[in-house]
Structures are given as C-alpha cells and as structure tokens.
Image 1 (cartoon, rainbow over the protein chains, first blue to last red):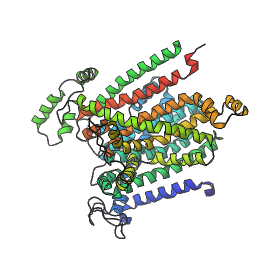
Image 2 (image 1 turned 45 degrees about the vertical axis):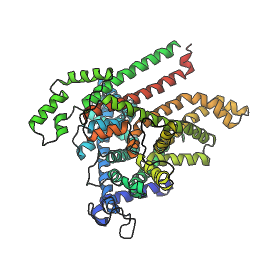
Image 3 (image 1 turned 180 degrees about the horizontal axis):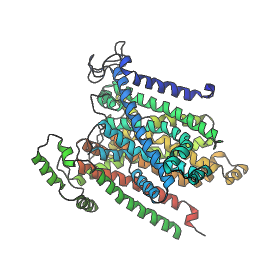
Image 4 (image 1 turned 180 degrees about the vertical axis):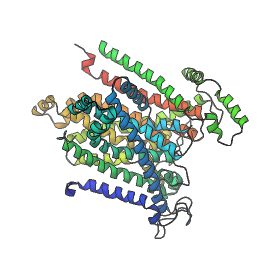
Length: 275
Length: 318
C-alpha cells in the first residue's frame, strides 16, 4: 500500500489512536506515579510535578489517565470482539440457513433493537452482579444486534453468487460455506464497521461508568474518572474535562480512520458517489 | 385513503404488539440471574430468614408467568407497584418526573429541529463549498463527543465562568415557565448539540437525494434561484425522510436524556432510573425501562405513520 495516498486526516487519526494504544500497553512503564497512589493535595493545578494536576483524592491525574486508557481500551476491545464474533457468525448463519432459523433470529434482533441499548443495559445490570465479565457480555451481546444486521445483509448478497452455489453442489457443509466462501467476501465491510463499533463501545462503557454502573472504583477508567472529578467543575476546576476530552479525542481519531477505510473500500468497488 | 389507512392500522398494531413483546423481554431480562432478585438485592451475607421474607414480599414464590401477568395487569390500569427501597408508589413518582423529562426533551427539540433543517438546507445550497465542508467537519467531531464532555464544558463556561445559567437544573412544581426554561437551558443545549449534527447530516442527504431528480433540473432551467428550488421543489419531496430523521433523533433525545439528567442533577425519569439501578430496585427499573421503551417505540411509530401519510401515492391509490 502506498503511504502517500493516506489523507492527512487519516494520518492524524492513526497517530493519535496509536499514542493512546501505546499508553495503554506500556502503562506501568510510562506512568509517573502509581494508579491509586495519593501523591499531593486535592485538585492541584497542572504543574511540572503533576503534568495534568491531581484528582479529587490527590492522585496524579496523568497516571490515572494512562492506567484508565488501559482499562477502557481493553474492555471496549473485548466487548467488540464478543459483539463481532457473535453478530457476524449468527448473521451469516441466518443468511445461509434461511427459513425459520433466519426468521427467528431476525425477529429476535428486531425486538432487541426496539429497546434503546442504554436502557436495556440498565435494566439487565440492575440484577446482574457488578463485575467486568458481566459488563463485557452485556455490552457485547446488545451490540451484536447491529453487527448481525450488517453481516446478514452482506451474506444474503454473497449467498446467491455462483461460487457459493458451486460449493453447495460440491457438498460442502454450512460451516465451510460460512467460513471459506462468505466470510472472506464480507470481510472488508466488516472491518470498516469494526472501528465504529469499537468507538461505540468506548462511549457506551464510559457512559455506564459515568453513571456509576460500569467499572467500579478504585480501578481507573475514563468514564469513572469523569464521575470522580465532576464536583470540581462548579468550582471552576476542569479535572473532569480531561478524561472526557480523551474519550472525545479517541473517538474522533478512530472515526477519521474508519472514514478513510470506508471511502477506500467504496472506491475499490467502483464508488457509489460521494454522498 | 383506503390503502394508507390500512397500512397505518397495520403499523399501529405492530407497534402495540412490539410493546407487549418488549414488556416480556424486560421482565425476562430481570429474571435471568442464576440465583434470584432477592439474593442479589441482599447480597451474599443475607440470612436465610431475610431472603425468605424478601422473596415473599416480592412474590417470588409464585411462578414467573403469574408474576408477569400480575405485573402487566397492574401496568394496564396504571399501577406500577411500589418501590422496594423507599416503599413509595412508583406511578406517583414517575408521574412528576416524566413531565420534567418531556419538558426538557421538548425544549431541546424546539432548539434542534429548526436549526438542523436550516443548516441542512444551507449545506445543500453550498454543496462542496466551505459552509458544507465546515458543517460536515463539525458533524464528525460532534458525533464523537460524549454527552458529559459537552455538558461539563457548557457548565464550566456558561455556568461557572460567565454565570449566565444555573449549573444545576433544579425545578419544582410551582416554578414559573420562564424560570423553568432558564434552569433547563444548559441541559437542553447539551442535548441539542448531541443530536443536531446527525439530524442535519441526514436532512442534507435526504434533500440531496431529491436534488438529482429531473424536475429540479427543469426548475433550474426555468431560472429559479437555488434557495427557491430547494425550498419549493426539493423540501416538500424530502419531507418524509426528513420527518423520519427528526423522529429518530427525538427518540434518541429521550434516551440521551438519561446521561444528561445525571450531569445536571435534573429530577427526571433518567435520574430516577439510574438511581434505582444502583440500588437494585427491580420494580422501579422494570417500570421506567418499559416507559422509556414505549416512548421510543411510539416515536418510531409516529415517524412511520407520517411517512405513510406524506406519500401521495399511498394517499391517492389508482
């Protein structure tokens, strides 16, 4: 691939998303202080000692941001994996099997999607134990409905192609047809969607943590950090805006990358106009 | 009118069916724990007597089907049960809060809908020129911003630094309309910014779609000004998709309200739901979850009905 063809906006996205990923992976090495170590006064301003100031308990905000990147990105990524594996597999299976199985799955997904995701997540979380596994599963399963619709739509198109017909006549099983014939042809669409789903997960997780129903303290995550520091806002202390801004920046970066991938894949297919 | 009426009747009955299905789903969703609700409310350290008492109080000893129909029967006559944590009547509590939430959402809708349509028209008029590009760029940024980022930014600038609006949206029952409006200004502005970009972009796409029709070219060749073409020829034909977009975004407003109400400590449905999720007060969560879902389904239904009605081919079948 020619690096020069990547537009400047996509470069910005790639650079800043990589910085976040780098911070997440090497958190213990680059964080100046420990995650829950109290190192100074409450809400100290930015200084050379505390680059982003301190939080509501006097912990270094930069260190918590770096550890928070780790938690937020890891959980969002795991939930995206759950959502994609489940959604893509069921979507393609529905398209290949057809008939009542397709009807059952599709109507079930319609039903799940008729309730706003956040509301349904709140209903389920009110009875589930508050831990990370529950969070990942709830977020992953609810979001799998979107991936299901997309992959079913793509798979229905591919399923009527001649090479799939040939594979069926050869006597290949459904698993083979899904993994060897349909998946490779649906992959480019799914990859473009991957970025958007990941961002949705980051925003979803942050919203849950902000509401106090996501990751529980003392573990650091961006949404939770906004909640911890929100009382400072009324006194003009912007500490809560730093994690909130980080979420926004990450979301914009990934959107820029996804936009570029989407444009690229449409160009490859001959383009369907710029709108 | 016959065909349109039949379609609408079909759509409305589907909507009602959907609400019933959702009520089942919400009920089942709160029963899927391996243990039961009583256990999760009281925690691991609960004594067997406490558990047995709470189970009896919640009616957990009856079969799930009986409980579901008792619950549903109550809802149909407006009885949503009593809250576990406070023992108060849920219908009364929700009555006051639902009004507050709808007020906030309506103010946000009044701000956002005309602005979005106007900006959409401007983007179409100046397609591929700087106003359009600027609007597109802001859209990308604003769909990426979490509600709390916008909310706290507004609080910091307009509430704390400039002191124009209150930072906490308190409302009480005997407040004048003006005072109430002033106190929901910042939350309404936050919601507006959250939905504006998406609504505007979809409006732009809907009108652009119509702009490719042959009669638009005729209008251009007639020498009409571009705003007149968009306003008189493109917009009426784009109404159905635009209304659809507006309704979907209003449905989103109702959901976005949950986070925004928590940011501004606004006494509405969203705050009520979130508070009781963390207290694990299942009857309240079921009731408010169902109300949110019903409003969401209702708005989607209205969107479909309007798009059926605005289609002349369905209104006057051959």
